[in-house]
Image 1 (cartoon, helix red, strand yellow):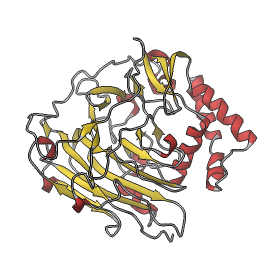
Image 2 (cartoon, rainbow, N blue to C red):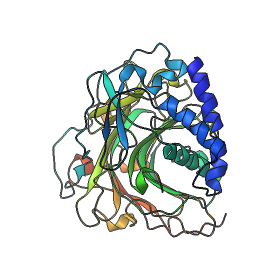
Image 3 (cartoon, helix red, strand yellow):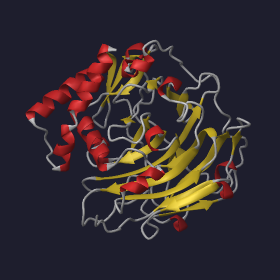
Length: 404
């Protein structure tokens, strides 16, 4: 408990960085740097083995029992689950389609940590600065309808919404690498949530691009919240306690690559988020590899303890600077341009709350939402094969004026 309290105090001390980043200072004050270094020393746990990636960041192999997750007070006596008790049968047929030439995300660096350890991306000062920046910009609840109250013409969404009780969802998220400017972000993800405002709890996973984060390239990310719609809510990847990493191969925060090529080869993240029907833990699975989970004890009954009430698939962008045009979403092309040109999420699946079976939502089950259709949009798509039985294209070139 003492270490958890210390971590909370250290995190609170980084609030001053919001002022730093919003004033566009690239180097924090000496005092701010010292506080960040204290936080880094707590986040980065003792290393068993390390890998220097070709992209410059470091992946550490950490004793699975000593990872940051267990500094959370609710996980003090937690029993580690190495894999889900059951994995949903997301795919039921092997039919192919002319659109099936997209390939899964792969990790170029041949990395696998020793047994008994997990792979964690080593946190840096820049990681902490940029995540404080994103939270100050409004990166709190991707896709939440509560975001409407924030405004405005700074947040833009193009998503498919599913408003039925469920135990999880899946989708294959097309990977792109949009070019952005300072104080902007662009992402594509699956998000599940329950509750409203003060009781809101959510989990999101996908890729995100923001300047200085992952060298301004698309990165694999998760984001979760358990304490409602508050300024301090939310946790990104493994930068705070809660998410239990179990994978020895894939680290949150690593680059999501290869990226798709316009009118060329397409790549995708095959992401599933589901609640284990025995333990109640929420699992994040990538390409059939269990990456880790959020223990049920992190959530309450009005939130995600007993399933979710909403699922969102699609894209979101944000820009904080007035008199600047909004950024690219997805590939930068509108949905009607179709496969190999517009971004997609296919293989949409949900786990029904009553039958607990995997189902494909029909077009009528989905509510499409684009709050700036002149700049971004979303539409359903269909084709041959299970992955294209329920799918969406989304995105756009941006260019909306930011005036407030």
